[in-house]
Image 1 (cartoon, helix red, strand yellow):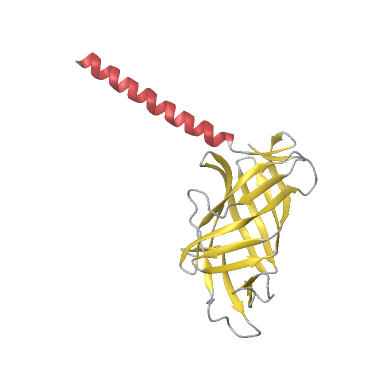
Image 2: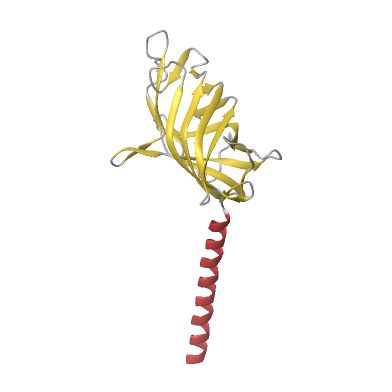
Length: 213
């Protein structure tokens, strides 16, 4: 009986160790590579076309996006600036903005992390701490010829959102934010669940090949 118990405990220990080792190996493999070697804080920039934020019946659309950041071997990325332009709401009846520039939504210092979700490699964008214990991506404001849009009150965009990562043949990386979202997304706007749809293409500022692996 004691021998059987010892054998069972040994097997459980092996299984537990294998699970930890497997998880560690999986986490270790999710890394940014630059020119075939592990990244070391290299600067990146990206640009894309239309992006759409949908929350309930409310839709905010921007015509273009551009951002800057850096990538680390750990799979981490810091999106230093993400600038959406040509942003409108209420069927283009009003502009959407985050500051003094109408139609421009500027998001800064957003941490990201390569992860696996639904069998896909994704770059997970997380909200930042804007005050002790308070987190968000950005606060959106809306304007119609100097007056607030009645159907679009000021709102905080919160949570996390992932983009599918595709390594392109030319050494760039495409980030695809899916309309249906990705498992684990927690994006929220106007107090309800939200989705972000759009694509942008990221490359090394100094040139060379970038890939997520």
